[in-house]
Structures are given as structure tokens and as C-alpha cells.
Length: 132
Image (tube, rainbow, N blue to C red; front, side):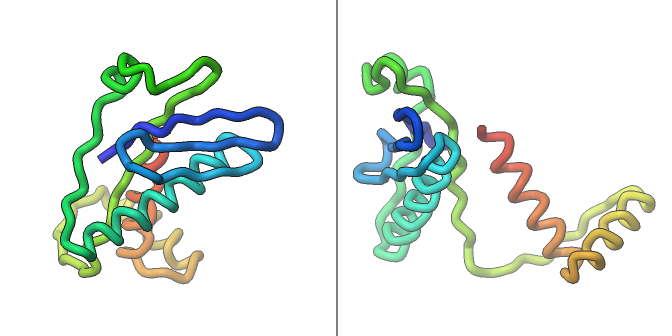
């Protein structure tokens, strides 16, 4: 799921808030830092709700938020992924080109991590990068 964050500020004072996540916001000395802080707050908020057995409501789409008047003059919007880990691993059978798999194994070895950890990290980075 991707939630819309509204970013505003200037100079070294920036904030980001989620209109669909009540009370969840973040701040920083740049737009990116504010979004990262807000993203961290959103993950903590969602994990807390989930732990208490509450459902996390799905996000509205960007158009709906833009048309609602919640985005003010000088503010920008970004889509931020909200993905909670399930806390358990699942075995998966994947198929790769032999050359790509060799490169994956070499990169994982250089980082001192397993192939699975490398692929999971790469997938997380790709999912998050696609949101911005």
C-alpha cells in the first residue's frame, strides 16, 4: 500500500503528514528527511494498530486527496509505501538467469549476507524507490 504524504516547509524546516493516518507526521531539515521521518512514524503507528488488533484503513488515491482541499498552496505530495513485515519467513522457489544469480551471489558475499537477505533487501529498496 502507498499512502499520500503532504510535504511543506522551506529552508531547513520541513514537515510531512499523512491525511489518511491521523496524527502521523514527521519533520526534518529537507523534504526527503521529513518524508523519511514521517514514514518511520507511519510504520510505528501501523505496527501499534496491528498489535492491538485494529485494522489499518486503505489509503485514498492521490486524486481524491488533491480534490479534497487538504493540500494547500506551496505544499507537495509524495506516495510513501507502508509495508509491515509479517515477522516470519516463507520459503520461495525462484528462477534466475545463471549469470544474474552468480552476480547476486557475488554481491551478497561481498556484503557478508545471504542470498535471501540480499534479494529481500533489493526488493524492499525497489518497492520504496518506486513510490517516490
